[in-house]
Image (cartoon, rainbow over all chains, first blue to last red; front, side, top):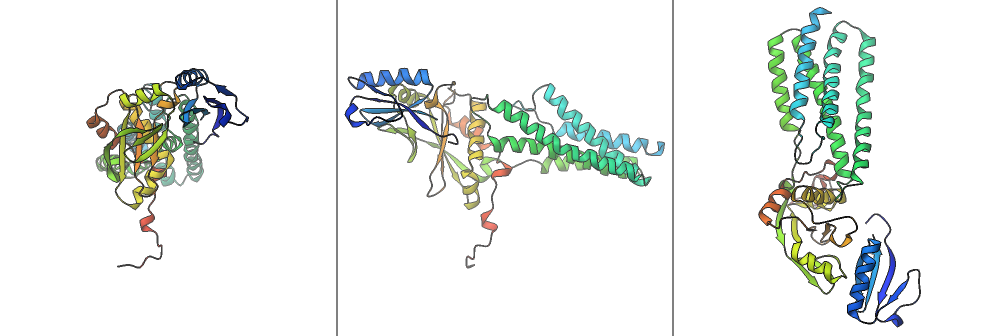
Length: 62
Length: 294
């Protein structure tokens, strides 16, 4: 809460809904791979995964 | 000087015994056993000694000695700072941190107890110069009084604790009607549904609304719970980190955490005994807000 939170990666099945920004965007084929990639990234980066909508996840460092 | 010797010895001893009674190493493992206890007890002894030798110094009109003793007493303020720094360092490596308010409270208790001991020793010695037996009696009574009054409030004094229902609405985690956070991973959701416990803490009055909104107080609740009930958590598992959120409209607090055992009777009993932090206590009901009295 006290530290600044930051999006460190974006994972999505619909890359057209995202404009390039500060964080890398991972494009996945379907929602199943979306979960898999998110899990891997979350484990390696120790960050939490939040769902923006069913097709897009963001990885946030708290 | 020898006429005061017995009084000083008794004063110091009574003060030291008071310190031993005030020390309480419990499940929190603080003060740590045994080194932390030695530090605490030695300071208590020094405090008791300072308290009791000040009386002969005053009676003999030895003002230099009295001044020096005053100087020694101010050193106990440093003790609190030292204690706070040490605790803060250790706290960084806790899975569920104590929080600054809790640490400040512990440091304050440490300093406060030393002053109490000094006071007991001082009074005991003062009486001991004239009546030895009366001094011992008064010393014991004072110690008991201090033991009783130094106890702080606990959470059950200021709030009701009820079980909350953990549920998901899409990716959003709720405890009853209070939103906790957004969880994206299916695997985390599953773990949370299996292991998480929700608790709703309802403040009893407007003073406790403010106390419960204090972030340090909330962290203390989480720390206390995780410490006694265990926690299903590791570093690098941000989804499982215990959280507390409040309902901004009525001040209820929703607590979400993953204990090792999911038995609500136990959880309730544990949370009832969370200390209410000194730094979190507010009494807005005693302030004049221009409300018309009815």
